[in-house]
Length: 276
Image (cartoon, rainbow, N blue to C red; front, side, top):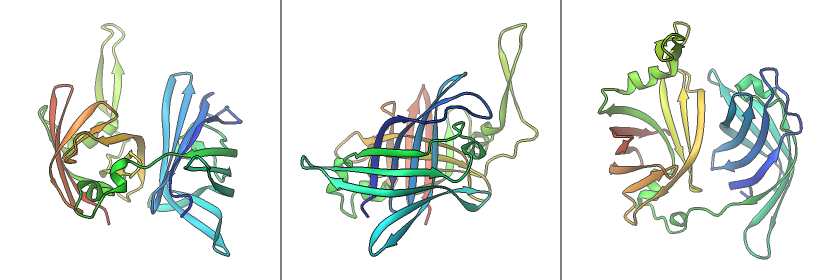
């Protein structure tokens, strides 16, 4: 597939920066295609400051005479895939210096506000450079940890030194902050109208991208975040996330992944099971 990989759009700005929720300047950072899924990453600067927005889902290739003429992007809502955008006029060209460039048009089929992205329209024509895959990808055999870990995972166990487990960690999604104007401090409470998430998933790609998703009971995302990961030793038993914290793998197969970490003096244990 010529579109497979991570395509750096270079921070192209949206043509329309208004939103029904607030005014936000949105830039399109990259779009990445794995075997089955895509990741779209945006930067959003609004009245409350900068934040990131990410969209993750399945995609469908439309081919005519063996050539890809259209790519349909989907996003899962309450267990159903809805088409959110279409890529057309796709051209991928190999550069003389090595690597690939691509140009494409993107048309959004829905208002991005419907999926909690505060950009009204990012449709238009884009050009992108293909980023190289992680070095470990080029030599990864089926027995390597790199081969084993690059897939979709569902968290089945979590425990940390502050007493949180998986259930209490997921419940944090429903916490609301209650500021006290007299003391200047805040307390936190559980929103009674919030339905606690059903799970936490992670997708690792061969281009050093990760996607984390808090999902509902249908498996659809309630929150999507992206970042970077890399191996931090040659044995592929330690990995670093966002150049910030390190995970130490204690057990890894194509179906099970166990590791520990220490972040901000909090130690934690994680167990994930592969999603078919």
